[in-house]
Image 1 (cartoon, rainbow, N blue to C red):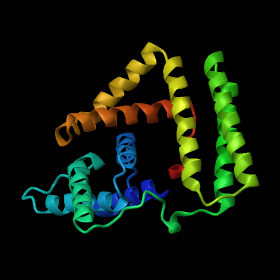
Image 2: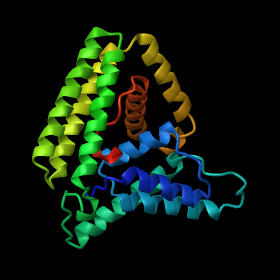
Image 3: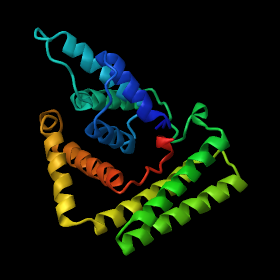
Length: 235
């Protein structure tokens, strides 16, 4: 898959243009984009799926309603992605699982991003009331600081390796937050997930819904504990 570090921004701006409004995406929408990213759905498939959804919607006899969520585009996104995979196989096209050259960043941009996140995690560790979670955050901050130091000493074009390390750090932080969260907090967040997904359930399969629920909960936990997302996709 051709991953783009501006994957989220491209999708947000494309959806806004298609909808004709500058309104921001919801937490549910961002979680859905994450599920597409993690499922290696190409950016082109997402944009094409959005376009198809709005084209079909425009042909409906009753058009006083609006498409308010990316969830309405989910089926078309998956159809376009599957069509692209089929065409690639039939055409004998080899898809390299690498980042395109145009996605590369200046080393200073990457380093600033890493250092900014180190500071944010350190502040979260100092403010956290749970000693165990504060130590988890401190560990994450130290690991991220080591990545930043290594990257500063040896800037490299192999950003995919750095991305894998950042993903591992995110997963470890998420595990710590989940363990430390009270039953009441988790229940509240799950209730929020259910409310947000109410309108989307008819547009998605059960496996898609379950994946989206996990991503939504993950996003809300990071927001609750004031931990930045570490992936370069958020640069």
